[in-house]
Every structure is written in C-alpha cells, then in structure tokens.
Amino acid sequence: MTGKIDSYKDLIVWQQAMDLAVATYSLTKAWPKEELYGLTSQIRRSATSIPANIAEGYGRDNRGSYQQFLRIAQGSLKEFETHLQIADRIGLTTPGQADHLLTSTEGIGKMLRQLIFRLTPE
Image (tube, helix red, strand yellow):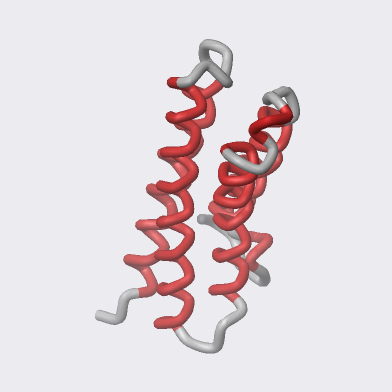
C-alpha cells in the first residue's frame, strides 16, 4: 500500500476484493438455474463477504476489531476458493476460469495477512 489511506476504499486489498466479487457475479450468470440457491448463492455470498468485512473492520474503533474482521475476510476468502474449486470439479466453469480467479485470491490473501500483521501491536 502506498499513499495516504483516507478510507477503506483506498485499500488495494479492498479494491481487489471488490473486483473479485464483480467477476464472481459475471462468472455465475451463466451457471444453471438449478444452482441459483445452491452453489451460485454460496459463492456469491462468500465473494461479497470479503470486501464487506474489510470495510466493516475499517469502520471499527479499534485495531483488535479491525483485525478480527480481516480474519473473517480471510475465512470468507478460503470459503470462496473452496466453492470455486467445487464448481470447477463439477464442470460449472470453463478451462482457465477458476485458475484466473484463484490467482486473484492468492494476492488478496497475502495482502490480508500483511495488513493483519501491520495492525498487530509490537
């Protein structure tokens, strides 16, 4: 992260998590309607939970709460990865779609870990 952070919207990790959520909605539009209340719903919820928890944590009054919400975002990220891998294994994605999104999750996960570490008191 470089530059001044005046809002959670300035955080690169939040921006990339938002991009992931938007990409997830685009991906799942083509999924079968019978999955709408199953895997489609689950993967969308986990994807939107990531930036939402980053933002909510940023809005808290103390570091401990912020870190806790970042950890929740990490959990949602792993949940998202799992749903995506299931979708890939059962043939809901085309070759390469899951790989591209999983590459994004690696970067987001790394940034979340770094941010949590930076917020840890010495």
